[in-house]
Amino acid sequence: MARELPIGVLISGSGTNLQAIIDAIEAKRLDAVIRVVISNREDAFGLVRAKKHNLPTEVLDHKKFPSREAYDQALVDILRRRQVELVILAGFMRLLSPVLVGAYSNRIMNIHPALLPSFPGLHVQKKAVEHGVRFSGCTVHFVNEGCDEGPIIIQAVVPVFPDDTEESLAARILQEEHRIYPRAVQLYSEGRLRVAGRVVQVEGLAKDDSQVLTNPPLKG
Ligand code: GRF
Image (cartoon, rainbow, N blue to C red; front, side, top):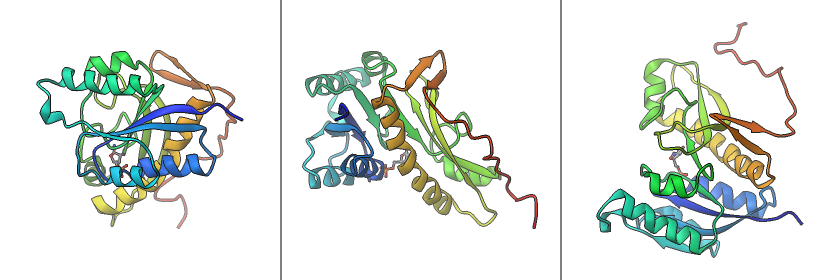
């Protein structure tokens, strides 16, 4: 049996990406075990999802800490106590300080609903629609001290249509998030990711150069 990678998932809200990871583990597509789900908000629906699957949960309210560093140290303490090897940010709406990034260097992943380095930050689906880009998508990356800046692991591309709204684009992107996040974690679990500067090498990948997309299409 493959080794199960011990992960900790940090959330603030709905937790659909957490759900996708739980589902991938249960379907045996992901060799990982969720050691803890931590939320900075006690009303995060992701906590309900975690409890339904009998996963350990903790609520760590950032408002009860004097500084970002103190909060992050408390996170590190929980993650270490639970022997977490890889930290998964799944809609965790907080910037990380060097206390957490340094403790888990190249061992924290985040998912962002745009094709980084385009559209970092917040409300990026709205920004993509307003900008008139023809494609957007999502990115799983390792977390460094910058905002949405770390080495890119996997991306998925979706088309943007003229009648898209922020909501319709967000829904299209979210579907792909649920496919690529478990895959990124599985690549890590298999030991296939090597970080060299800002580039992540993925071992043993089949190259497919037939996947060129145009939008609008060349014909029609
Ligand atoms: C996703 O759009 C993700 O890209 C962003 O926050 C959202 C989290 O959604 N980082 P959920 O809580 O996983 O449903």
